Image (cartoon, rainbow, N blue to C red; front, top):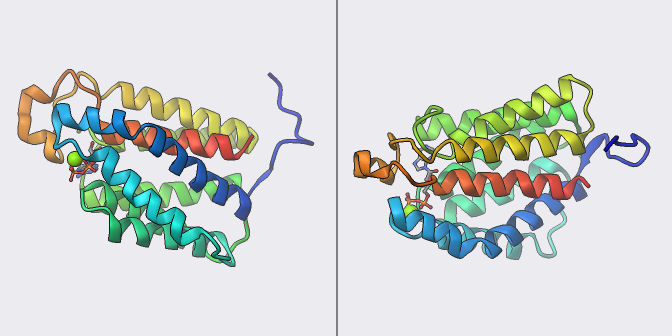
Length: 218
Ligand code: ADP
Ligand code: MG
């Protein structure tokens, strides 16, 4: 399908960002049991409950709030996740949003390149905090290819909608690639070889994050 530039967004607006977070909340709520089931195989069976508790708190905080810009909105999201999610994923997702927010600053809209810069900052924050590399069987295995796919799509002149779709598809492939891996970071690494043969739960929720972004940029 060829995108018509007259009807596809050329910038990510504050409303799009609100839609992104709302869609992520919805998807995490819908997939809560599945995420927890994945974490029961190689972790402590709480990834779905952790993330849905965090996103419920985010929704409550955002309800009625009128942030002036994208940075302010996502800073609130990040701080809420850090303070309400007990597991490793809370500080990691929280850091992603805090770094994205800092990169966005007080902008009310971001073009594709600026979104790419903010996504790259978010990924760098997750890596600085969790010290995981691609192949360690973590959310970084989905986040890294998604951020790369976004940047490549924008460099090739894609619309934001197509860039988000490309990022979502890359996240899903990255997540699928965690199946045979032996975990080297996080709780799953305690299992050693027995962690192989299961998807990493955080990589699956990261695919939901980019599915939500694609939904927010129809
Ligand atoms: P916990 O492991 O504390 O129970 P969750 O179950 O909510 O927290 O989240 C687990 C997910 O967090 C993993 O599937 C993995 O994707 C991610 N994760 C754990 N440790 C790291 C790390 N050091 N770097 C990146 N991601 C990590
Ligand atoms: Mg867990």
